[in-house]
Length: 465
Image 1 (cartoon, one colour):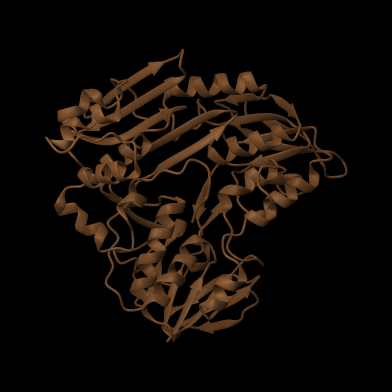
Image 2 (cartoon, one colour; image 1 turned 180 degrees about the horizontal axis):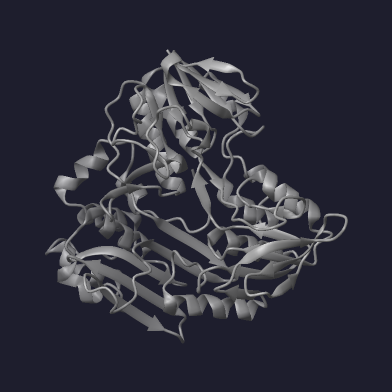
């Protein structure tokens, strides 16, 4: 049996582990577009800022592949798929046959239409190659424009600012972190940028990168006509599933590759996982791309197990985000941008303490927690995430969701006469996690190689996989 895995990031690594648990003799071939082992992409901004050394970026070394008898083809990507012949086309036209195939090619940075965008000095920021290119220019860059105020854009801006570069952020929409923050919380983020001395422009877009006669960047022109001088441009407006190489293969694609709950595509013996796919969203009840590191890992585990003959099921996921910049912390999940009083089907609960710098928001629909947003104090993120996962009726303690009460008080309705919890030990948090999940729902998780603590855990900045 030959397993071919197209891609070499977190979903691919998880699939390798899952395959070897069931099949220690099958041949595994990994197609790695980059000339390096799997590394933690969320850490590249920390490396640029000088906070993380380069040796910490890889989370799997060559020994991981050798120990599992995996052959890695470095520096080549999947360029096409010939399912009727059971083979893939690699960079340069080489063909490689497979018995079972996993598509884990991730996503590509989206570059919006801008005049002059092609050429030196303009980079996305999603890979080590991008980071190294930016780092090589820092000695010549005094001013940089970051296009996009999403998570990648904010972390890139923070890293560049820490390296002594003057940064201006340009965002098409009218707020910072537009897919995470609502109007009120975005004002908090704007104040943070102003205190840090970082300039920003909202509700405008870059239409042209202006270059000097030698081709170097001298600035950008906005749709409003404003000219911003700079020597470099970081494009951080998001990513799109990397479905281009699958054109003409017959595989079902919408925005991403469509998969079932086994992570299998419309083609027999072809599975997909990670940022490439459209999988089930537990909150919306529909399939869509959710480009999130932990979900990619879980999807890779399930796809790998099923490639090797297993019967694992993916129960779904939802967006969970966490980012910190210039001392400002944000944690969110689900429908975090719903504005109070705008949509009748949702009840929005907000607690705000400017003096302490605390903002909590919970979005409730049909007596279930559908989303949350936390600023600076993110200690409840794990509990809130567990409530979303469990689809638990929160009406008995809804009023305590965002208020200044202790965990023990907030959870009193859940314990129902059980031994009081002090939350002085991890044991109490584990018990809380299980209590949040109805017995009928726990089976979905015990059937997977995933512990309940992993579902409820919430890492803010460090890649731990």
